[in-house]
Image (tube, rainbow, N blue to C red):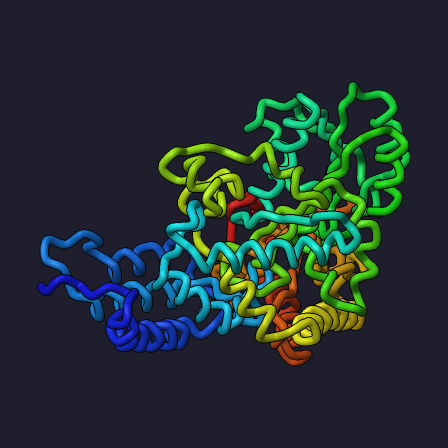
Amino acid sequence: MPTPPLAGGTAGPAALRPLIDTVLTALHDGAALRDGPLPAGGPDTVTPRTRTATHPLIPGHGTGPHHALRALVTALTEGAADPAHPHCAAHLHTPPLALAAAADLAASALNPSMDSWDQAPAATALEADLTTALATEIYPHAPSPDAVITTGGTEANQLALLLARERHGPVQTVCATTTHHSIARAAWLLGLPEPVAVPAPGGTMDLAALDEALTTLHRPHLVIATAGTTDTGAIDPLDAIADLCTTHGAELHIDAAYGGPLLFSPTHRTLLHGLHRAHSVTLDLHKLGWQPASAGLFAVPERHHLTPLHHHAPYLNADDDTEAGLPDLLGRSLRTTRRPDALKIAVTLQALGRTGLADLIDRTLATAHHLADLITKTPTLDLHDRPTISTVLFRPTGADDHTVATLRRTLLNRGHAVLGRAHAEGRLWLKATLLNPHTTPEDLQALIDLVTTTTEDLARTTTPTTPRTEGDTPR
Ligand SMILES: *Cc1c(COP(=O)(O)O)cnc(C)c1O
């Protein structure tokens, strides 16, 4: 076999074009074979089919680029849970915009690595400008807002706890029962005291309980508020929490992984009132920003807050290189080799503009409200609450938790819908996290119909005299 061509240089695009054509055909054919939000049959069907279609993974003699791309991309597409399908709505799993995926192709072809200027001259400049611009959206009045690109909310939350520890020593994290699990993991990773979780009775952090925790717990404190909880999309009372933090001398980190992009919507940005008062903010653009993973952000109001991340490696940021004016990027992440995720984000922001992004956000939130309306109008379904962002919890009226769990798995097994699950008010709910701006009212009605007819099916096929176990999935 001839030496395979490279993606870069002036010859790269010509080599890429036919390969991309093969990829696009495979993406199309795989989606047509699946014909739904996810493959039917569950792991018992999908795992062996994928194995058969992709073996041998390491053959003695290669099958060539077109064959391998066709085989593997078709298999992965046929077996995908595709967030571009309106009935794939379990998680904060975004359907990426085509233009962002196209930009990501350029990032892969050029392969700038963000750990030193000599691997990414222009990408360095772009990332620096983009992170400043995004940090300024969050902290419009701060002296020198800055941000670093992360792999997502998990890494950004880790940085929040790490930097608080570097400033104050072993901080006591105070969060809510609704806080994302990555906060507890970050405390564990960093050797910090286990977070204390205050109650969140209506889905948001209880202020009196927070006040009491800050009064009684050992200092220093790092309070974690959430703008868009994972289970319900609720937004903690950010301004009031910031007031309590000021009163008690606590630091505040706001995990706005989900809700942060509401900043771009003049209609909905008021939901984030108080966001700028945080010492640091987590924001994900691979959720309400329609980016392919990953596209996370960790923002601070003052550039120097990031100083503890500075790091020295003579081969990447030698003192004399830095003195001679080469930007020192190693301290912009805990990672070394790092993709230019700024490119797809910048392409998206420039292509859509503020109004285009606001329109996507407003459309998505309107879709969630429409789903809530339809549930309210369906006598056999109960709505948990009106959505704050785009998460809608609901359940069949009168169903027990076991039935709700079985219903969710049945929809998965049949390949009909990908819905999530969440506990609220002591019960299990189906969770629809709407992120697809193309979803129509008809799509939503079809989803409701799927849920109600599947519920009826289950009631018919389940003999009430036989006790069922969690794992049972009536077909
Ligand atoms: C998604 C999410 C995270 C985790 O982010 P990843 O990008 O998955 O690492 C953390 N906090 C909240 C509130 C989230 O929604």
